[in-house]
Image 1 (cartoon, helix red, strand yellow):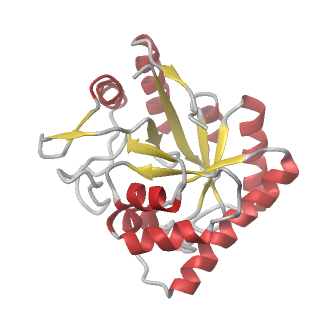
Image 2 (cartoon, rainbow, N blue to C red):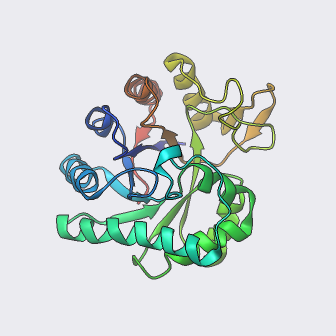
Length: 247
């Protein structure tokens, strides 16, 4: 591929947001569920606007104590309310700040559950139907998220993770397992180049996963996030791959 989107999860109270916004092309902004509030949303919206970075809504379980990374079984109406309420809040602030919300990206445990269970994905995507004209879904590649979002008629951008290990089935290694989170910036950069050039990821057991991902995520809450993002962008651009949002 000739271009790749770099996205980061931002507005989560981490110190590297401003530096990451100088590197990435898309910002997935926490909407007050797992993290974030009106102040952080507005500040991140303004900073993204100033840099020409595309903005997306990043809702998750309203469980800040566990950063949205604990799997919860919620009644459908409660999950609908959480997702819709979070996205609506960001959209309202974004309208006031003059920033279009281009996409939806689910966070943490909710994202993983929606990747595995079509019914969860359907609840989440139905919750935001009609909120934003032309809204895209940034979905974990080769997962139920892609299938369900396409069935709903959303434009879909397929995503891979730069700093997370993969199972052979194409899903992420749970964070509770050793090696789930990657930290070596040089190795991650090489991985990004391989994805862009060959459409491949290497699973934790060494097997090869084919991917059609055109967006690569760098988690903003990883301690080395800025160094990783910088190394990834530098390596991709050295290979002639432009960093560009697809929205």
